[in-house]
Image 1 (cartoon, rainbow, N blue to C red):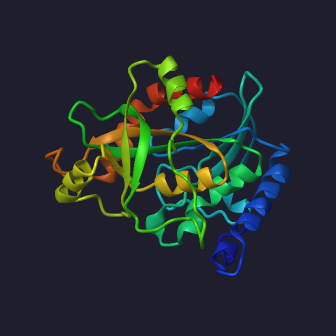
Image 2: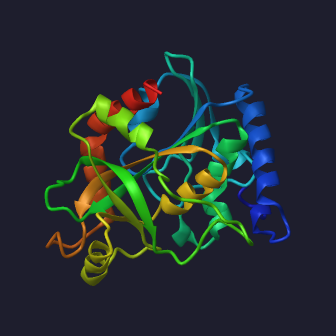
Length: 277
């Protein structure tokens, strides 16, 4: 679908799950793959993993798939890639993330997750670049997400839809990741709305309510993945210490540079974790 056309998800009367099914049909047609087993959303710093997971079957521009938009953020590649792992698992790699701060609403934010579920994926791996609150985490540190706090004031669920979020981030998959790298720490991710970075006071609030990681993605996607019945693994790359923890000003350039420096290590880790699934 061309970006110049109105997005069908913007029609409040439209069924977002029907649109996701249309998008899944587009992916099947464009990649030649009738289904996928695992979906992976690549956040800032994680892009190199796509080259290491397995053999690429097809790469398509996300804008050719119903409901998808061109990424607004540098560091997101804007493609969907179908990859087969050495163990024969089919992975849909999502390099086109819509962020909540773009103002399109939760339906657009979680469309990639719902589309992945409609392709057959039962496992959702969500990655991001984020700020760290723990002093022991240095920029370039990968951290498992153990839980989240949704500070967006929004949800992808509509109407009287009650979804249990207990153990949202799979203990089984976190244990699997720690088998690959026993040094992995974990923490609670706080999704703020953005696009401004958090103030030092907001970071202290996040710490006070149990947060360890601050960022602008992932939580809404995880909720949608749970609604779809997927098993979820979350990874944050600590690209900087959060405001007030870090004494120097924050910048997107810093995030990009930290991701590039850590890219080979974290991408290899992610590829090995997915390869073990």
